[in-house]
Amino acid sequence: MDEVVLGVLAAIGSLLFFGSYAVPIKMPAALSLDPFVFQSYKSTTCFLTSWLVLLYTPFKFTWWGILGALIWVTNGVLAIVAVRWAGIGVSQSLWSGLSLFTAYIWGAYVLKEPLKNHGLSILALLVMALGMIGVGFAVSEKTVFQSLLDIWLKLNPCSTKIKDCPQLSCIDVQDSSEALIPCETTKTCGVEEEYADQKYERENKLVKGVLCAVLVGTLNGSFMVPLKYAHKDVVGAEYLVSFGIGAMTMTIILLGIYMTALAFHGRPLPSLYIPGAAGPAFLAGFLWSMGNFFSIYATLYLGVALGWPLVQCQLIVSAMWAVFFYKEVTSRTGAALLIGSSIVVVLGAIMLSQFGSIG
Image 1 (cartoon, helix red, strand yellow):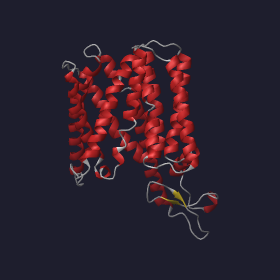
Image 2 (cartoon, one colour):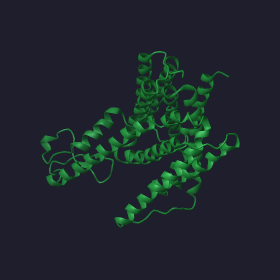
Image 3 (cartoon, one colour):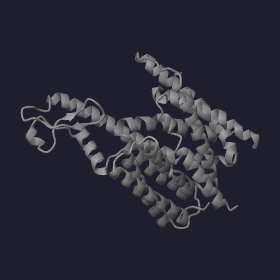
Image 4 (tube, one colour):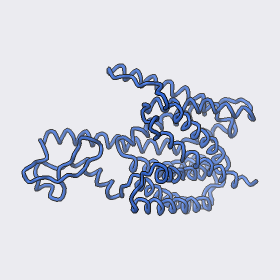
């Protein structure tokens, strides 16, 4: 079978598994696990399943696998912070789009993979990124305008003078979702110093969240680069054992640092085992590992510039789970935006397959 066909089939398999691995994360039992602990379960599954490739490949070790695992574990932690501080719509859309262009830059300009047409390939990436932004905002049930308004409100809370804010009013800042409430003419927006502190805290968290999302996109787009360099020592699935060892090692180190930091600040340590939570956590790790297995062959046959961006279509699969399984998108507007944006992503992927790398 033609390598391009095999690469496309591998990309489809990868995006199906990658797009589904987050489903167990939202199961009620799994929500009680600390994010770092959950990542530990995922890494353990990745480590254990990686040895299965020895059933048909010889054992080979490469330090590039350790580097790839470091990127993955770090990426997982940064993604959690980004979603919590900048929101899932902004974060996921930002890092998905950046992943496309980062992978393309690596493949086209660093790894020198052959391209049919540079200009049209970049245009295809822009189309895919636009569609991914739409999918991200559809799942969060916020339009681009609403999300930008939320960001503006975080950075510019109402002043103490109502005349300075005639259309909007006080902002409830007790939680992460700033809800607009009508101001009574006899009520002010609070003490100026208090809002200055709240503004600084919101601004600080938002900036950190966006920066984390940018780092996630950059690291995610670079995720398969170590594999390309490792091809001098290992080929295809031979890379997985080194990656599994690295994933387990990096997770133990980071979890140790995390636990030490909590203890140093006098905070309670998270439970490493909660009844009923292990199953969803291990399932998430298995689904991710399968996605990683297929993504290796997608990158091997199609190259980083084409294979990895196609894998990023996983966003559509995860969005479908959000709509049909978790019922997160309830409005007609959100559903329409999701369907339309998904079509745009697919069109961009078709364009990229026609004009992108065939390495």
